[in-house]
Image (cartoon, rainbow over all chains, first blue to last red):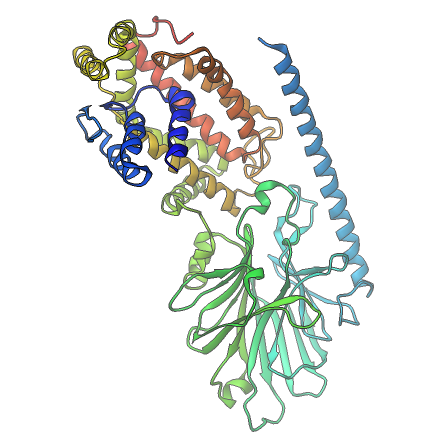
Length: 70
Length: 518
């Protein structure tokens, strides 16, 4: 499960993200954050954190550095 | 350029074109065969099982209906304004109908429970038919509402009233199988096909025919039961004040037909002798029309996961079309409208992209320097962004939001009968079917390629990635070849507007001269 999601994100980062240009307001980017978060917290909890992160990443946010909490 | 891919691509494209024309040919032949079949049925041959004499035809502006005067069954209902193929000479699509070769049947019957007997004709008018049972007890009137998709059925007890008041019913009988006159393409068969009940607890309780393995019953007042298929449906609408049992039954005996119907309860002698009336809707699923017909009937239009986006989209699209009168143009105008609403957000995004492009070399330098120190790289990058005034304004969420809009648009186009057989211009004669000449997918691929040239170069791209990126437009075009032309039209309009906006912003920030990813 965990591995599957990480593979999906890897594929996205490699081949799909280049289509959109850089949009993320954070560092690391949302996809990188999701990958690390899933690695650390597992697919479910990590996925939940990633979803919250994506919801935070909009025109209403200031952005900045936001690392995965260990 | 690798010529091998070009050759492979051409062969694939050519075989697809051949397949399409073969399919079209087949459909025309099939239609011809069916037309002859109807003629033969009129000659009292090839009648459905249990029928011995030919049909009586009644019609109004919207429907042509074939009724068996011997059994009182409605054996065929054809929609005049919705043709099978996209030309005027083509026959209308059938909702009720039968196919002797496959054994498929879908018909309507009504009357009184356990009173099954022959009828004789009393009166035939262009749009109505009156029958009387052989024993003179029951009279039945089947008529078509003027200029409407409704068939009206009245069953009246005219003989001596028995001790137990007879129980009126109306039901549709249908065997498992693909709807009649459904075309063979992928999208034609992907919509929901099955039964739906309107009940007080669940306004849209749906199940596929195969899922009915025992009697399903709902006791209630009013409500409807419908058989839904792509674009069209047949629905029994019951009077809202009368106690009803809505039922669905698995096939009994060898007929193989599932039963979907309504049985009236607690009927008084006076009601039976005055006549029990039912409305049967046989027509296209147009939201505004269904809203006025019966409560919750519009729920039969299944807009998929993102219905809350798809419905407003369709509403806007209909409003625009009411003014311009061309669905293709309406799709383009709707895209322009969405883009204008999002203009401030996307303009900010493009301006930071433009700045990022000019700052590209510096960014690369930082990335080279702090390759091994992620935390430091992050801070340095943020510092550079701040200095250069780069702020990826949109963020990931708006980007992700585009996907549901696209999916909603897809479902909206797939489900909307309004776009069936609607032409745009020149070669696009049907927005709900794939572009026959692949022009739109190719335009999209070209636009995508140009957009790629403008986007800032992603840092650290390896050769495989670069290769994939080059082929991406081709791959997307290949997927779009089988998508409805309306959807591709939306995508083309969307990326064309983006491209123009992006170019304008780049010009403003002097980023046009900096070389692209190549």
